[in-house]
Length: 311
Ligand SMILES: [Zn+2]
Image (cartoon, helix red, strand yellow):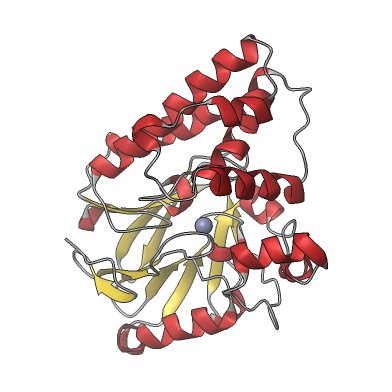
């Protein structure tokens, strides 16, 4: 099994992963698929310094097989803010992801972290380890809907859009000849999934799709490399939250009360358990399309409050 240590690790058949423990807020993973004379990079990282360090670690592979293509699995900054450092590559994402990418800009995150008082202090608590200076949002140069086969130096890599789920446009990157799939944030291993978009049923369907694939190696967006057991665990969490939140919706409970009321049981040991506050909101929006969730500052306040409570 691949150790969960920072840096580049070779998986099967010229597929690599760049891991960033501890996998919590902003500490995302990236992937590299090497073909004959060309490589595909799965995601960049949250800031320029981290992305540059990753590209340095990939230098021996890139020397023989330069990165010709970047895939952004989704629009969150910890998967695309380093795009500007991969000059000359084609950047591919689903059309939904490309459309969402501008909404949480580096300037916005920098602004929240620099806010006065408790709000700034809270965001620095979540994102203070990252440096958002100098980032120029670099958007995809090619978009797709549904499915896209890429030829990377003679290897077929298949992109499969499974969003909206974690975000509006999540993409899986499947490398059939290595029996490997890079899932982006469809999988958080060791941490709690966060459902920014939903519906949860789409995300559960994405887990089922992976469970049905001929794959052995499963690379999550956050946390250690896993296999289908990791996929099943994420599916179990989402199905549990969906059922528990739905029951409380029908009982007339507010989403914030529901988030505080649901017992996490076997999932209590996951990191970032406060994300249940965001996940319950997604369930309520699905059940009542007129339901309006609070803004980003309040959602982070709720998550911080929940994690303080049980600490
Ligand atoms: Zn992420």
